[in-house]
Image (cartoon, rainbow, N blue to C red; front, side):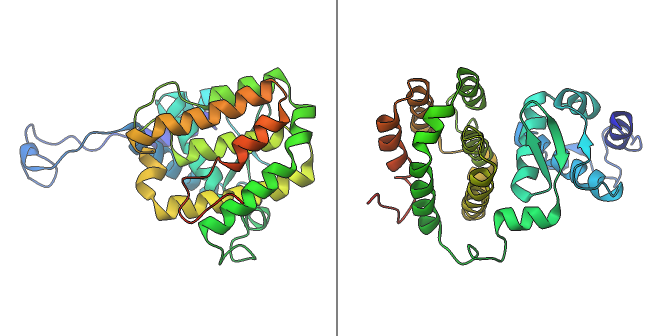
Length: 259
């Protein structure tokens, strides 16, 4: 399958005369912008989604590893990961740590994200309140079941750089989905998954620039520190500190106020 993906994404356009595009315009007249990592991620996501549809892959079908996809598309692994996060947000794929990348059941995806369901008419602030209430309720369970490997996996999600493009909505969602996995409880994971995906879907719709390019440069350092503080509290199994951090984790959401 990796070879097929590579063939689909490496076709070269017809060779044009030097200095001119295929339409006859001079290259200097064509506006060309920089190809960013986010632009590549969008292209890879589109290609993967098209592949799933054209090959009629079914729920549970496994895709190649991140490394194989990286080689097939001839892009870096971070680009592939960003593309996978986009498709996870859309409910097309699901990545399980240590197991692989799988096609998701469309019905389950709709149920998990509650598209058109009970959460469809809720505001971001209302979802933020629900998120905080839910996460506060699983603090003791997370502290009881968390391992050092879990904390290492959470740290690995967070970027080291603090540029405006380093912490996207997709990165934020992946962090909190991994946080859910610590409970080792399928029912809690399923409920929290739907809540998180709807919250981040609304966030991405409200701020598409943030969804792709990341939080503002001024705010990204604060966002990263908030998440790193959660990991530090988990490493200490400090339930009280974790509750305090969760209670104020979404202070920047418009309209949300901790009770």
